[in-house]
Image (cartoon, rainbow, N blue to C red; front, top):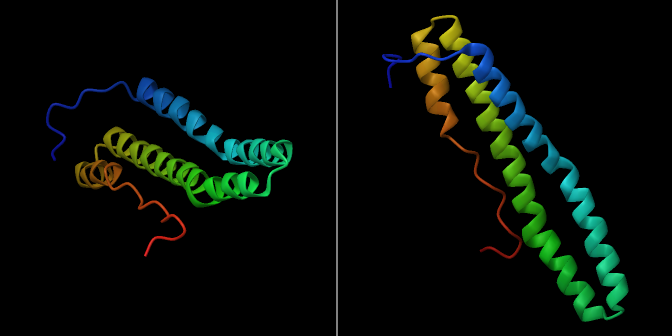
Length: 115
């Protein structure tokens, strides 16, 4: 990928990435909120099997998915900022490397029980 044809407003681009990063950061608090909600739901059911199922759903799937989304969002936003900074500094090689890294999304944690 080459920088040919790039024409961006650096301030606007950084502002957009900043807003995206703020949204990604909200995922951090959702895991705690989700855990509280699931715990309260399990207690309200007063049924051991339902409580265990809710706990398994949270621990095995929803928690890891939130973590993966948070990590991927941080990676994408961070690499996008690096790309913008490289563009701003007119460092074509660094910009190409940073742009390529945007698409290298981290591998999500595997759910428990995967073999």
